[in-house]
Picture (tube, rainbow, N blue to C red):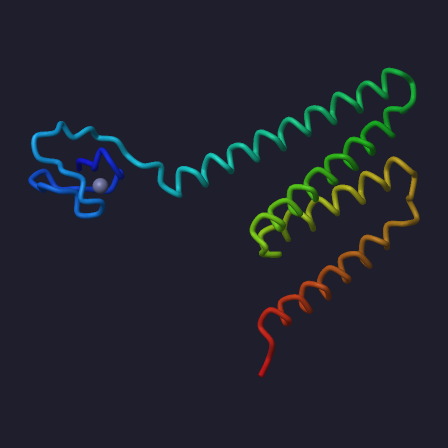
Length: 157
Ligand SMILES: [Zn+2]
């Protein structure tokens, strides 16, 4: 399918003028130039996000190793600190998706998942062995907040 060399809309081979922008097509070589569509842009944006998140995780892993090598962290703490940072990065990803789309649902999975990873990491790093019920409380709060938010979006008559 050829495309208008002026505006990029699809045209048919025997059009004299582009039906969208009235660009004269007769006698001009029609280049198969395609406008970048929204889907491509969205995919590129996702790739960009994934790259940034991956980079942040690697940076954080490097920092954790650095602290461990410097003797600041023991091996157990290393695992906990790494998980804590990883969780926070995932939460950040969720907040990012939320702020960009304005739709809380878009970031919800990341925020909940990242929050749990961060809590588990914090538990390991700071020896909060007796604090695990906090996870249950957090889970309950998340469910309640989510229910309230869903309801405010679709108020009952
Ligand atoms: Zn055109």
